[in-house]
Length: 409
Image (tube, rainbow, N blue to C red; front, side):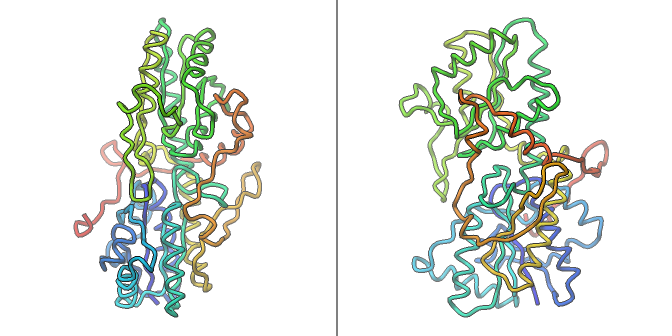
């Protein structure tokens, strides 16, 4: 029996840990021979671009280094698998790759859109009488996959965002003049990552004083009122805002900061809300103001990753392969939280159809009535996900990363 693994969607600092989990379980399973990696997600299966992972992950040290290396070692893609009726040749190419390499199990590590591929591919394979099994292993820093309590990658991203926000808070408080600092956080339609900055209150911080999410009802005029109210109480006001906060269609000057372009899944390329609000504060209030876009650092900063996140990412990868070995296909693995204190989860599976192209929103009951803050009820949800520190391998004072082989670059 041979297996293949692919990674897709936006990188995280835990997605390689899931790859290691599948790989380790493969090594422990006697009936598994070759373990292939598909280069650049499903595109590698279409183009028959596979690599024997045993040839590049050779030692326990390699596995440990890879599990703490951010981004996708196998590369990624934003490819939307078409419907079979629209392009049967694509599916035939994938099947040919499976057959050429005698692949019996395909593990796809990704988010909402990747689960769409799991659904379509498993459905196709069943329709042609193939026994090849397809299993989805979740990942996304957005934490917006339904069914699962949380997603691998989110805990580490939340830890980075909260820690960085705390450092920004310290920096913003050094001057005597009033100021506003706006932190723009990733989150297209769901505000989980931005909301996680509320965890700082567990350590006695008051800031961020204002938190705005895509699930909130946002008004530019009310935003200025909120900032003025907080400035009356705090010399340095800190705001956390999701990149996907919706502005009014006629918002003046928004086109200067957001292009409106979309990807193949119809998702808009966002970012720019921070700069827009910065200019608004400068125009309406006239105080010292700056905006900070955390950008890709949120998903690639493994130097402060959550040990809980990395360990769980590896575990769910292992369980994904076990589920396939048990004969399951078209499923996605997920976490079910059993307890907050002490924190405990079980790993289970569900039909990938329940997760594909579906986004889980931040709970409205955890948003303040004024739509500008997150309630304390959310803190107990977030805190367990950021616990523990990984003993990062260092060289010359810098973290060491597992480097992609030359043939994969």
